[in-house]
Length: 440
Image 1 (tube, rainbow, N blue to C red):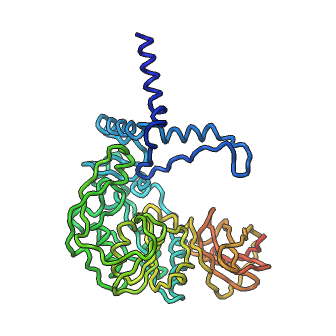
Image 2 (cartoon, rainbow, N blue to C red):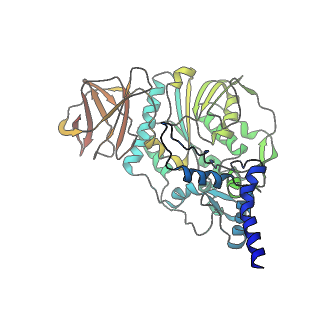
Image 3 (spheres, rainbow, N blue to C red):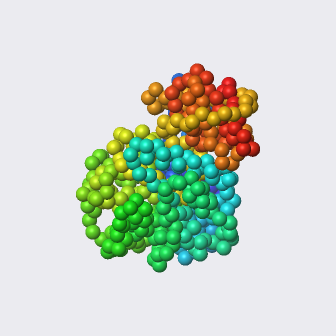
């Protein structure tokens, strides 16, 4: 008996490995990124000391029946314990699934500081200034987290914060700094039918239509897409795929009933493409839109309204694309959970020139200067130990003052794209007084 048990046990253990030789390769499910094939050497020809670890990761991601076993475990965990089998997905009520990365916003455990809120709004204000000085209108918008709209379907063990959200607090700063934005939350929350998928982290086609209409109205036009007929279709949710990779079930969802009236003018594979270009007979002019995955449903709606569009997933934003595309409207969409990107991923753009300020000398600070991808411009990066919450950051380059984007790495960061210089000084306010620091 023991020999038979041992033989059966070993056979079961070897089946997944043996299956790799005879069955089709396992593919990624949901947002999974498969480990790369292991290599004995590094790019420089040296021995890869992590080879055995790489082999383990490669096999773990691809052994036969992996997705089926993961799905079986997830269904047992959900049915017996009412829990999700993956940390990335929250098992909600009545079949609703939520992305775990939205928990800090939901519970209010990662509020942006007042300085970060100012810096985020200032970054957008500089982007708006860049666009407007080049003849383009600017608009910023935020796609709400799913559990911001539908907290009733979250598990009761997670307590929704009663404090204002980062987005609510940021809007006050946007108002103060004159940044054009549209708040989609009231529009989406007022709808009496679901505007997000139950098993996906994004809005559905109807929710995207409501967002598109609100964006067009904020740009001075008329949005009527959500008033058109929608029909029932099916959609396989990304959260469902992550949780049940081999047995994800499609859900019913609304889609626009008619055919689209735009066409792609560049190679198109899917809405996940890094760059999508379209043309149509739309009444609006040309659009450059920086977007994230919420643009997968949104882009098609906007493509009908604008005569020419470029939709980019570039992050950080590369604003040189504005001139390259000849766009007269710049739209930036960002999901609520990623608002911190506004202060960690500075946009690539030439800095604006400012009037000189008089300041008290305050020592030296390190400024990293590197050659940038922008022609004839360097990238100046660093951080300041302490400054006023609402202080801009200027750099004097050979006596010419530029305003830096208050974003980048470290505490109170800054990033600036400007010409090379022999002398560099930092200027900032602390306790209401301007200080200057010589770059070391």
